[in-house]
Length: 535
Image (cartoon, rainbow, N blue to C red; front, side):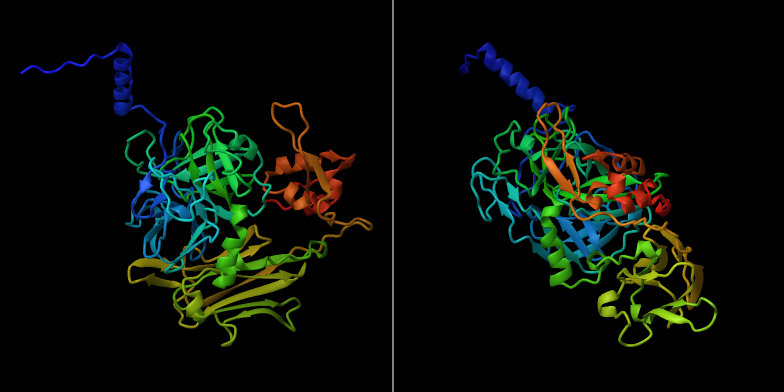
């Protein structure tokens, strides 16, 4: 029997060869079709890959969370709450890995801990689009001509609180809608292969990207980027030259900015976005799209602080001390064991040795005890303002005389601690790494009152007094005029950058004259330079 031969044109043969090479290439770094269908959740899980990044340092991102079913990312934003993407699906009953560093490692290695999601809450405004027939399917709240996901926020309440040490790396949620600015560096984090068809990387990776303006993002190469899909709730980021991106597998993971102290020994990470969607991973002209953290403020804080009435420091109203009166802020951070009602805290003013004044009492009466129902393994803070140049005594006791040493579920070794922190920066006493057993005390003196020259006021001017023009890159047209108050204009920058901004002039007036308090405290310039706080 003879086989029928096909007439193959040279062009068709070339196309087949190219297709075969692409399908089997071991060097391909960018996935062309990042969207995929998840049969369990019927939601696109489309940002799974860190393209062009590098392996992260151990505990470089200790707040990072990995879901052990589905492989999404997230962040621990409070003792018992994880923030992730709604399109990852309902996480109720699923295990999550806190401080995840090694892929799907639930053995407790590298400081990771396993918890379970007992309550899942999705942003009620979450929307997703259905595109039947091309593999991208979502069956909830279908909206035509919009982005795959909008308002992509979800929260998971853990079965047991967990503390992530913020001594060297501190995570903050950014609720400033004007931050970050176009062109600023941001960092995306997650697990994922670095080539098409390759296995997941063994360890967490991070990649530095640049923020795109929403206008630029709407005009990206693919039609999926448009005015309907990119709104104020979105933030776009990419590598200007291509080759770096998030992709399939890291949905729900964080987009952050990072600032270091002067010695670069400590850093503050500002959570600005949640990995959500995109097209053509890593290709130039195809930005990744993230759910802007500031746009989710009402959902995040409303759920955790109002609906669930969490006692986490995340929900507390910040205590602000009077700088003009040289007051010192004292924060007592306590990480108790499973019997928090046994802990007693007392702060006294003992200046002069007689007539002690008690300023704080916790656990001394039934009314001010911290109950196990709420505070078991739960890190909480107590803050108060202290007068300058006075002597104070801090005392801590444990009624059972066993300190904060215990185990969780008879397995995980647990050692709590307390810390005394002055002005949010200086830790003057701590029990980290040891147990105080029955109790101990600590005496300290606050700095003397700073005498401000007569007629000099160290108070920042009223809101929206700093007016500046935001320039557009590579265009001669003038940028839009923006108003910012002193706190926002001088926010989240290193000392040298703040100093540079303080010396700028707007309408012939220096910023340091409009914002004397902020410039004095943060950069040591201007008439209030004596208030400079060294980190």
